[in-house]
Image (cartoon, rainbow, N blue to C red; front, side, top):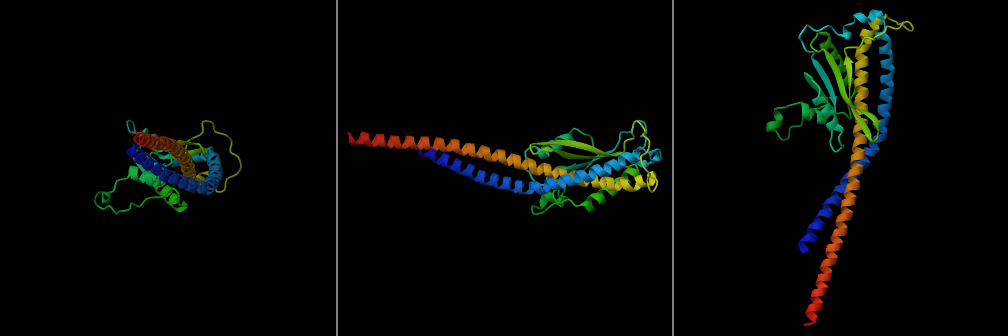
Length: 283
């Protein structure tokens, strides 16, 4: 009996510690939610604007000869694909990271470029990890990802695309649907898609559409990448908040159940001791 009481008390204390941890992490996620959502909405506005410009440019007949529409592959040659995979810097956010990794697993990619510590840990290998326990791997944080980094990565990948080293470039990220729902998506950046129906050009482009397309693609790539990183981080914060709320609720229920069981066992012990005392006094 004493052993049961001690074990129950230990379990209650353990769940109480978990409750404090999940509650604190939930508060941190809530405090970041507003800022992350604002950044995501601003990124969506920019992405919508520059995507609208790109949609108008690809309709121009003069732009059809651009290298950004890709080239016909030699017969029998499979396209070389590169994926930029955006995941979180931390765990404890439900299926946020796992959903992205599951989508990447089902796709064929020659090389993966990770953003976020979890993606770096999964898709990169470093020999120093094997013998230096204090080694800290340098990675691109999804929370603090700068636009300059996006512009530099976009420029290098565009050069590889032009040189024919890469045939397709896509970005795997989480799309924010609501605070309770985040969906893994892939957005293909290059090659550009030719419209099935050529519409009449709207407006006058200065300089000519072809030159403008060549100049705007790096900015389009970098802007979309930066916006999707911000959207993915908003998804991470939302997923962590919901996960911590659920964990806090479960821990509270477990504490209530264990406390009830503890009181029953303790009451039973007290009753047994009283019965033994009464029985001993009657002899």
